Image (cartoon, rainbow, N blue to C red):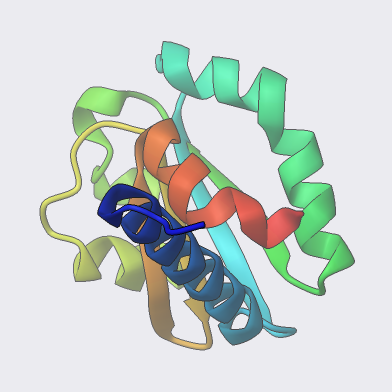
Length: 131
């Protein structure tokens, strides 16, 4: 049976996605961690936390990847300096266009390996890390 172009492209895309996620999980091996930035007034953050946070953090832990959460007061001022602990400010400073929440950063040492903004990007880019 011959596959049409669409089926081949879908298969190729799925292979790239699986390889990319697997590569990210390998790159985020022990010593790496995920920073989740939420806001106290973020309705989307509350829903993600209720539906996914515990399973995601436990899955990461199973793979030796840490999880840390930073909850700022308002999604309207996610970059407020007094909201960020000194040891995390370098992440904020490396992302000058941060607006809104939620944000997810995969960090290894002092290197940001991957960034996802919003729950859709988290689902496509990072959720498989905890599988």
